[in-house]
Image (cartoon, rainbow, N blue to C red; front, side, top):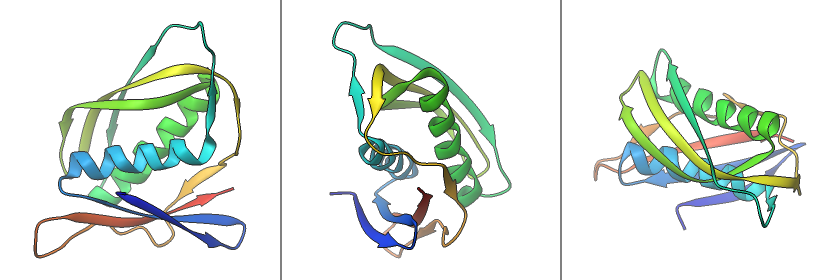
Length: 135
């Protein structure tokens, strides 16, 4: 599994890895979605949301991406099961989130924090970071 969780005081810590930046960002999104566990409305059509972000570094970009997706989840009451990146660099991304309308979320996440977040690339070329969700 590309992500794993551990308990943190009033928070939840997720360690996420990916062979590419695309995988790291995608799996971080999927991990976050697995925490909130949106209950899919059975007859509602699929949804798409476009996200365009810039940040000073790759770590900031990941945290901003997750917070933007979290905001969209709450505003539109949606869960996201897919993401397509039109562009993804160390400072900028443009992506389309694919998802579904949700009736309820099993768990609430208030925010994705910068605490302990540091996107790194290992000698083998894989990417990883830790993300802490404020519950």
